[in-house]
Image (cartoon, rainbow, N blue to C red; front, side, top):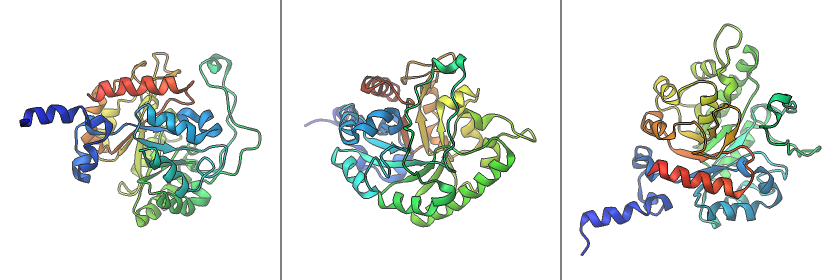
Length: 313
């Protein structure tokens, strides 16, 4: 008969595959070691292929080892051409869970062309000339909450919103509060995803990050911290967690090279993931999503998965 030590040794080899994880209670999951967390992926990472062949791409994602997904905007409309219920089934039939969805805070504005000095480090803009209409939280927050509930999601996330002025920030805060209230009523969470610009001071010297977190209800508006963008802005994620403990249930596991411009595979940049993961309990971490903005292909997500599992181990 195997003794307890043998059992624990064998069990440890299975945790990353998610075999033990479903047996954990919600409380045990929240405060479990990082190694017990399934690795998720933000689907914007494979933006092009998700729009060309969503089901085939999801099969490749599952084969690479990922267990959870976070969806984003797409050129097919809806959820990669599916309804929320249909997309949930596609994901779950592949042995994964659909945990969160990104929606814009306001109608999307055209992305300006990058400056010549940074153009070489930026992916080509894949947007077609006639993008299908996309829902946004300002105008469609209740519909987005309803669809997130229909899809069985844990979180609806604001992917980005105008934050260049105090007026823009105040308008976004109103949207976040309304969305957070609607999400709570529906039994799901709401979070805001940052870029580096949230740490740039605006009129009055405060940053969008400070204003958003200080002027929203901490129980209604959580944060999805993008570790690479925080690093680019010169911020220490662990110190951010200390300032707002328990308010960071989602993380984007993204890496950036030493030039602080080039997004790269997890483990191939300068983000100190191992140190940051030691603060998972302080942050209130629940879900992690690898993201590499429009990665070259499946090889990149395989590299990120392999490197991240070493960190989690």
